[in-house]
Amino acid sequence: MYSISKKINITKPAFILQNIFRNDEIGSPTVIKFTCCDCNHENTIEITPYQSGFPILQIYKKDTVLSKNELLKNRMVSETSQGMLHFGEVTVNNLPTLYFGTTCSYCYSKYIGVFGYGETQPGLTSLVISGIWKYEESI
Image (cartoon, rainbow, N blue to C red):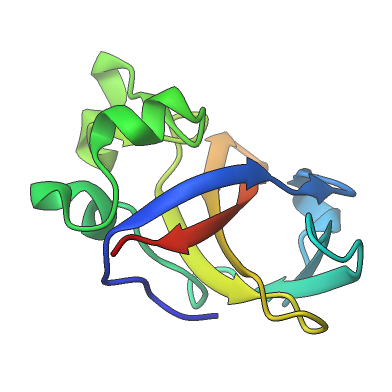
């Protein structure tokens, strides 16, 4: 898992086996499985609550990696509801939103994943993966 600092282009989404985890399903870490778009290899990534990922703001602040519009267009995030704006302009399910970079362990294609993690209501904690997308660095 790594942060992304160069401008990228999203090419296509990867297949994710399961994208919503709640309470007892959220382990330390939670294992996410996705299939590479290029070689069909099943990859795993581990998300540890409050330790994994990087703030989504790093991606769209000053259009450093992707613009806010590109994030919205690719359905990586959605506009945050008015009552939850303290989490940022864009979120996944109005939860604190993070991203990560990863590579296919077989062919080394590059991917970006976006997820929200937090309490959706008292006593209900959710980890929601909005998706994992193949990307290429811009030239």
